[in-house]
Amino acid sequence: MEKTNFIWDMFGTNIWTVLAVISLPLLFVLVYALIAILAELKVSAWIQERVGPMRTGPYGILQPIAEVVKLIQKEDITPDLSSKLLYNLAPFIIFTGAYAAFAVIPFSEAFVPAGIDVGLFYVFAIGSISAMGIVMGGWASNNKYSLMGAMRSVSQLISYEIPAALAVLSIVVLASSMNMQEISRAQTGWFWNWFIFGGPGDWTKVWVVPFTLALAITYFIASLAETNRVPFDIPEGESELVAGFHTEYSGMKFAMFFFAEYANMFVVAAILTTIFLGGWNSPFGDFMQGPWWGAMWFISKSFFIVLIQIWIRWTLPRYRVDQLMYLGWKVLLPVALVCFLAISLFVMIK
Amino acid sequence: MIQYLKNIWSGLSSTFTGMRITSGHLFVKKVTIQYPDQRFPIPSNARNRLVLTPERCTGCNLCVVACPVNCILLETVRVVPDDPHQELYENGQPRKMWITRYEMDFAKCCFCGLCQAACPSDAINHTTDFEYSAYDRADLYYKYQTLTPEQAAEKERLLAEFKAKDKPAVAKKTEKAADHPVTAAPDKAATQTLTDKEPAPEA
Image 1 (tube, rainbow over the protein chains, first blue to last red):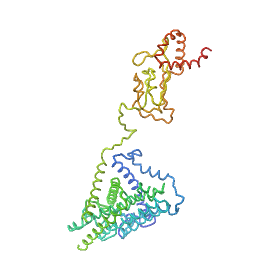
Image 2: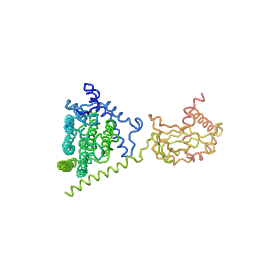
Image 3: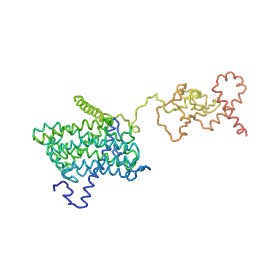
């Protein structure tokens, strides 16, 4: 077996190392979610020429902790006429779906929790679990807004999964692997070896550069829709649906939804980073290349994508449902298909 | 087909335009003023807390009349010539009226500024101080009289004695007294309180 996990290399495989491997990404997600919440608050404030939270800690950096503490303190309400089991299970299923995807994310060349060969396929399979959680939560709440939000969310998730999957599939064709660690390794070298710039190869790759660029944009737009972010947040459009599928949730269960959203944001950003932006590779050849630097590069690239997601959220208004379906089925899907065929053709001829 | 591609292009380019605009706002100077730490200048003619300068107040009652919400209460007693306690106004003139009560129910004030406009001696003023919120409405009941209640009672007694002594003279000057209706009202009040208190000093 290849060396994909420094914990197993150093301490062997036993119950403790397995626990450590499982909990390391969880620790990362907890810290990352706090930072992302702070980034969301600060970026939204700065874009609107406000200063954002300033009172909790220096420059308000402890604000996300205060918000989490507040959410923990809040009363946890279960509606009387809800389906109790499903209602209480839904937030945890959603978070499990979001967190399970972390199993195959290559944080560094020396650390990927599970270096399985069908990593990308696994991510897309596990991503659908959160759709199940959303529909569970929406239906079990016994609230018309929750149900409508859940239906919208699931329809959106299913329609945008297809262009996203096609975009990923094109890169799989180009890299001839579904193992995310292999895909990262294929992009070693300077940044023009990244798959957003056609991947490694001689000058003939200029023919695929426009297609891979278009695919990167396609995947990014589709990932926004999959994570229910603005401008695709019609499942929780507050002017129409109160708060969508989590209307009835409060306290810690609402915090789980919130958490899952941010975890999902990181998952799609990590996939985008891995398949298009070189994963843990340094952009400058051997400069700052290595296992530890790799983790730094990977996390900063992913966080940059998360920042773009936040940036877009505070720029664009929300789509209508019909506009969303138009964009998904009539624009992104044909674009992804054309790019997929072109890249397949290129790989065949080469 | 052309229209379709144009649509896609305009969608993409308008998104980038929007993102350029929002990123332009990211790092400009913020408009927020961190209020308790940072303050902004208030125009000097701002009408905020209402303040009386007792050294200037002549007790003319014009502010009481001007106030549309009746938030000012004024009681005055005429200064007796042979009172050993005499005061000067801020401008050096001798005081003619003791202000025994000048009370303001500031919670009622509507900040119209009419009292300030009516005041002939520039004694009542809206200041720029706006941080006067209180937990109790009684804390917004301002009392501006400089005399203690005992002193006020003393002044009233002196005035009553003076009037009793000068009754013939006062009777002669009834026409003149009618020219000053303002002073007539507090006199009435003074005599009323006097009748209440009259048995006490005699007994």
